[in-house]
Image (tube, rainbow, N blue to C red):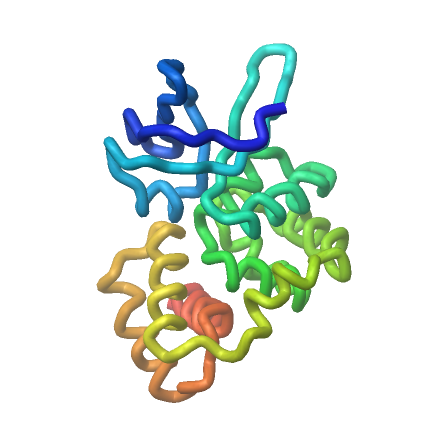
Length: 197
């Protein structure tokens, strides 16, 4: 098992990167939020999971242990494969995704492309009560500041395919009417308003 990789980023792709370690280039699939923080030539250390199938060996990487922990939990759900788990981690910021799982918010999960209502409900059902304390601390460490909540919500909504012009004004309105709202609540409210249009 390859538990981690440390080396230089040689190439950035749409959903993966190539890390050169000891002269060997490894393609590693990582969440898009992590990919956006990296650049070619940068030294990086990734925690990894190697998934072996008959037709492929695929390496998944994570900058934070919390992301790896959540990836492992998501892939333990029947019907949630590695690519689906990576899609969830790429689309929703970590605190928002953990909050949705902890609170049983299957509607938020089903708003992610490729996640149907039944799969979202099964994921919530199977993972409620199984989230470790380190992950729950992501959402229970206190309400995020105003700017951070809006930033996280905006990133999630943009990754769902909405334009900045569509969602930013709605986020501002929701933040003004409910300054205590966290990113998850903002996303839920804005999605509701977008669906009614």
